[in-house]
Structure formats: structure tokens, C-alpha cells
Amino acid sequence: MDNRLYPHPFSADYWRAAAAEVRSVKKLTFAALMIALTMALSLVPSVPLFGGAKVTWGFLSRSVCAWVCGPLLGLLFGFAEDILSFFVTGGGGYPFFPGYTLTTMLGVFLYALFTYRSGVNIRRLFLAKLLTNIENVTLGALWMAILSGRAWVVTASASAVKNLIMLPVQTVLLVLLFSALRPALIKMGLIPRDTPPMRP
View (tube, rainbow, N blue to C red):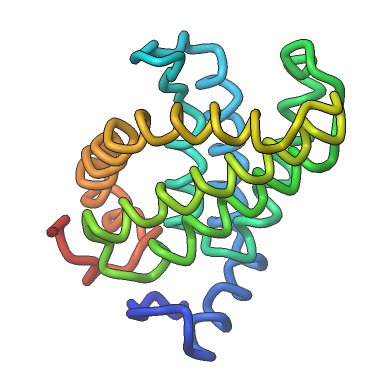
């Protein structure tokens, strides 16, 4: 099995490796476990910060799945995880809307572009979280405008402030988690053996 590092997603080898993950029983099993973990994490109480911001935990399992499984399997994971989470948990009182499924899929895809088969570092994790937060703000406000008629700019402005407050905390959590999981994931053959330790 090809298990090499690729420095960026601008090569054919990167996407060939990503496509192979969709046929890997090991990676499909890992993705299924991450779906279960994401649903379990949704039951863990969030941690309030300030300004109405609060840290929830599902982004941790989604980002790890993206790191291990890549962008293509990550898209399938995001689709399955959002659908299953909605029907298992009842959607938390919100109606089913495919826009939220798309948001989840794109979020995992973005994480993968910065972490899959790469030398993950603090800068990459920060940028991955920044872009997923921007995606959550812009698309979340759009879906809210469609569903409730609330002005996009009002929802987006309030959401942007909360996501900005959460960003440094979420980045620190990602750095700690990726650093802690790296040895075990290498040992299990889930990420390349030459994946370097966390660095700036």
C-alpha cells in the first residue's frame, strides 16, 4: 500500500492515494469508528467561553478522520456522519436540511487538504481551522437565511465573532490531539511512518 508523504495536494500522486483510501477496508473501518465517535462527542457538554461562543467537540474526530482518510473518503464520511447523526440524535430540534450536510462534507474536505499525507504543523492546523470556521460562518448564515428569512449579514456577523473567539482554543486542541495521536496512528499504519512530530 502506498503510504508516503506528499507535501501538498497539487500532485496526481496525492489524489491517487486519496482515491485508494475509498477502497481500503482499514480506512473505511476507521471512518466508521470516527462517525460513532463524532456522535458520542455530540453528547459531551460544550464549554462556554465568552461573547456567546462555546467549544463543542465534533470537530476533533472530523479532523482526525480527514488526516487519516483523506479528502475523498472524507467527503463520504462527512455525508454519512451528518445524515446518521441527524436521524440518531433527532437533529437537536432542527429540521433536516441538506445545506448542513454540505457544510459538514466541505469542512472535512478542507481539513484533509491541510493534513492528509502531509507534515502536519501548527500553521497547517491553524489555517485548516480558520478556513473551516469561515466556511461555517458563510454557509451557516446562508442556510439560516433560507430557512428563517433572517438577514445573512446579521447572522454572519454574530457567528464570525463567536468563531474568532473559538479559533485559538480550537487550534490548541487540534495541536495537542494530533501530537498525542501521531505515534499510535503510525504504529497502526494509518498515517505514513515518516510523518514528522508537530512543529511550528
